[in-house]
Image 1 (cartoon, one colour):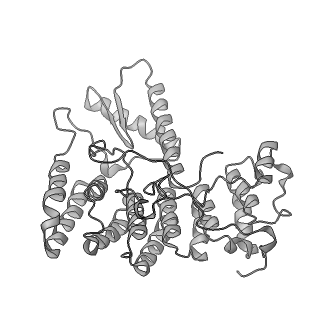
Image 2 (cartoon, rainbow, N blue to C red):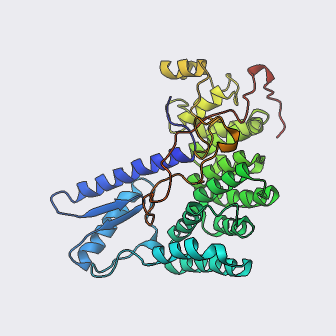
Image 3 (cartoon, one colour):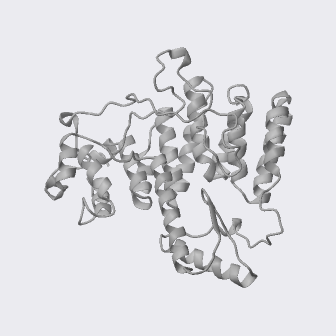
Length: 374
């Protein structure tokens, strides 16, 4: 019932906003034959002159700002149509990983990984990092070469935050299918990245990092929750609260911060989802967040303890129907979906519906303690 709160929801919302921006742009230039092509978060706009291209770029930037967004200037350029739009590196990188990487010694593998980082920095394109991660996944290299690839993924998180969604899937996959993941190392890496990304309000990255903490069974410190409440959007806040509900229940100060975010219209304002989940999760006493202001529909959902957040959701790489424990995992950490430089699933599996099972039991209302431990 409704969208699950988490990284996948952030992606859906981003796609909806992207389409809305394109529509606004087209409306602004109604009557003109403007060519606009979108591929995920990349946009190409055709123009007949440099002046027209600059005007379109300015106009598109204005449309983005209406939604609180802006253009990534480092990856934006006006290019002659005679120049090649697609780079040549994907094929060479694919062949290098597929044909050469497995036979290299540790030192040479490290050199290849360093070259991937240099290439991404030189091209100013995080897509190179994500492409490399996906290629390693397609070639099933994680467990065989984890001794060098784990540090590669750590550096991806630290230096290329747009790759965090792929890294999170891979680390969760390796953790479930082997015992090689260094949990102490990832605890430090995730907390450093959470502190940085939550401080600047990178909601998608924050949601994925929180999901990875759940997958690895790591604890979310209250200090990080405070930053997320102060700087992030509703999805990240709800996820953080579900990972450490006692940090809210036992702190009047933290509960007041949530109430401040929720505002005067708790179940109809911008943070209505937070208010609803606070009721269902019993984070805030009814006296501070009365249900009387709920709509009839939300009231019925709350009475049935229906949550938009599914703590029992598991990654796609777990087979949805296979009861054989030895064959419960798919071959790939990242589901079969085409990116800008991907092959469109030429060697992958089709997507699967999630099989769900509880990773955490909800506490009963009688167990909830609202004493102050701030």
